[in-house]
Length: 165
Image (cartoon, rainbow, N blue to C red; front, side, top):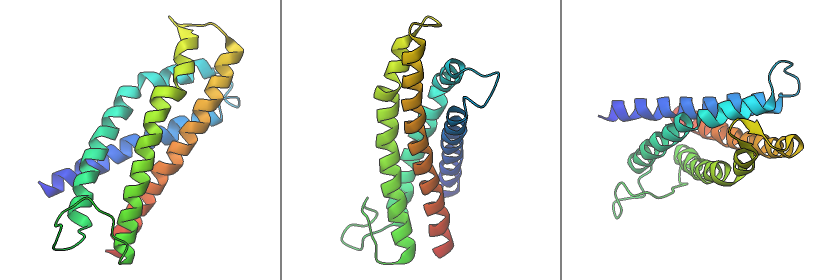
C-alpha cells in the first residue's frame, strides 16, 4: 500500500507541476509564438483545469499521508501532521509541506479569482474586450509563474529530503 501511495503522489506531482510549468512558459512566451493566440492558450488551460485540479487533490491527500508517516514529532503525537526542523532531512520535509500549503492556497486563488476576469470576458467563444482580456491574461501568467515556482520548490525539497534521509 505504501508503494502505491508513493507512486500516486509522484504521478500527481508530475502531472500538476508539469502542467503548471508548461502553461506558465507558454503564457509567458505567448507574444513570441507567432501562430498561437493568448485567447486559445487561456482556453486550453481552462479546459485542462479538471486534470490539474484532480492531480492537486491526489497530491494533497497523498502528501498529507506522506508527511504524517515521514515527519513524526515524537512519541506523544505519533504520525501527527506537524513540522519538525530537528534534522536536515526533516527540515526539508517540513519545508516541502509549507511549500505545498502555499501552492494549494495560491492555486485556489488562481482558479477562483485570477481566472475570473478571463472567464467573464470570454463568453460563448467570443472575447468581448480584447485589451481587457490581454490584461487579465497577464495577471494569469504572473500568478501561474508563481505557482510553477512553488511547484518547483516542492519537487526540489522532496528530492533533497530523500537524498538526506
